[in-house]
Image (cartoon, rainbow, N blue to C red):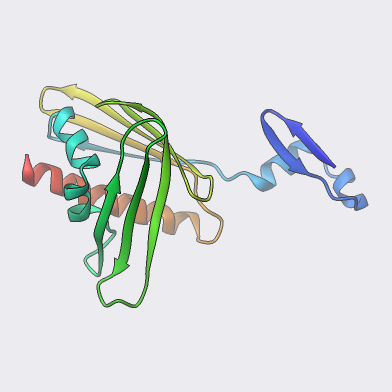
Length: 169
């Protein structure tokens, strides 16, 4: 049986224990809290937007540490547009494509997208003044890796972006 509540669908098994658990407990079991990261960049919002979305820039900052690289990036930043970032260890031991679809795009202000596995991400570009932009990124963590590891990895990539943007402004 499927149960729909608050735009969420839960598949209820026919076992008795599923009926004995209060609904609010079931909803908390399956949903992980989103993670929000913020960083202030001493670069104008238009440049931050350009560096964040241009494939020629993405390949220069989109990795968590110096043992990884992003040798390829495809990015069609528009509602319904897609992206693909090739992420791989420099030693060739591991690699994967990160793919997603843009759900909402407001140039120099907001990007909402979902990843191939359905997780949602939001990126806010908040112009503080003519030469300062706050980047706020919120993402739904996946369930395979510890939340703190994911937070650290996404923050490391964001910090690489911060360095790249300020060095190239």
